[in-house]
Image 1 (cartoon, rainbow, N blue to C red):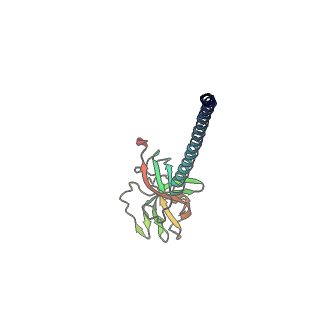
Image 2 (image 1 turned 120 degrees about the vertical axis):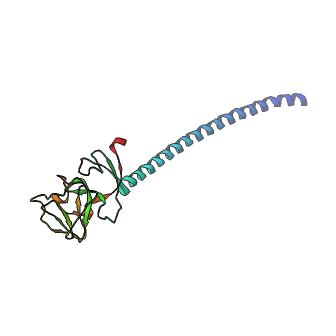
Image 3 (image 1 turned 30 degrees about the vertical axis):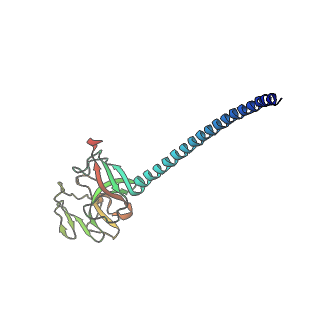
Length: 201
């Protein structure tokens, strides 16, 4: 009787044990699937977080610290030619003579070289010479004369502390301070720090 009871009880207990095993396998698989889904969600969140951080960094880099500006004409040749891409630094606070800058004037973007700044007296003479503070400038790196544009600017011009006189390197016909007058400090977008040549793009 004891043996039969033992045999009889083993069957149901074995079946119970088998049921628990199957149930445990189903639960384990559900847990693994849930973990995979959570892992995928975490991966997606991580991707979008990195994407947002990258977009913010690019915005800060190229809209706050630096800027890119293509040269639209040959007003700065031979150093900068039409199609060249200029990288300029927006946070420059010390603009000096001979610096090349990108600036806005009357809603348009220009590029030019600073030849005089606040406090300087500027004159373009009838014989196409540039005079700063009554001294005729010898610009060894400029290969063109500096003709006066009639009926635009009355010389001499004495610059205010927040003004710059900016000329293009190619002086014949270029639009610069001979045409629209001094450029104010808040009109300067930045100082050009490097050029990417059109031939290398």
